[in-house]
Image 1 (tube, rainbow, N blue to C red):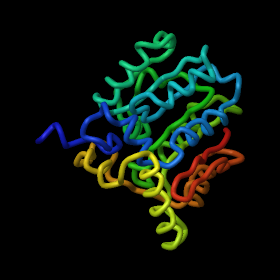
Image 2: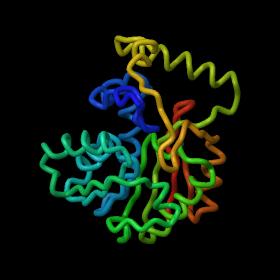
Image 3: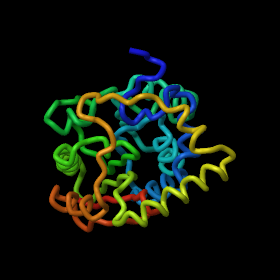
Image 4: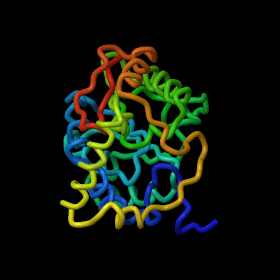
Length: 241
């Protein structure tokens, strides 16, 4: 196995160090998407769960809005955890974050993870849950709902299936223009990608429509499910318990 190119689903790039730069070139409005998600978290949230924390970008944005919050950041990738620890370890918030290297699919399937035993005021995720099957997505949502205090919320920023081939073509064209406007090309960005192999409960992209995600949230126990932001093939969706 070539460790330089073989990656876990969600790591995207062979070299984790380029993730933050390249994901912004690949995903239109990446920062605005995460900023919008953070804006949906209630102002008094003090204990937040970040599922699939990656390099810690979402956790960093959460701390800017909630500097006194305690965050539990979960990811199954040791490389991502290492990058997130490096980034947050240099910040004033290093004492307020707990990193957990674990598969959130296993947690959804009943595995006990000590750091996730207490309830949370909010749960977030970005560009991670779409690697689960629909069955495991539902299990994860039900697990999250049970681990949120009453009145708290869950928000997920993830890609979704377009409702038509025409919309998909529009999105792909706009994404290519976005990448060009960032000073590079889709081809150059893709040249940094690794070869993704299934890991634990996660595999290649397993996308659903926005409607299917909202229905799943409702069935899993969330109230007032909503879609506060969408840009064609990207969306934020979630709800309250």
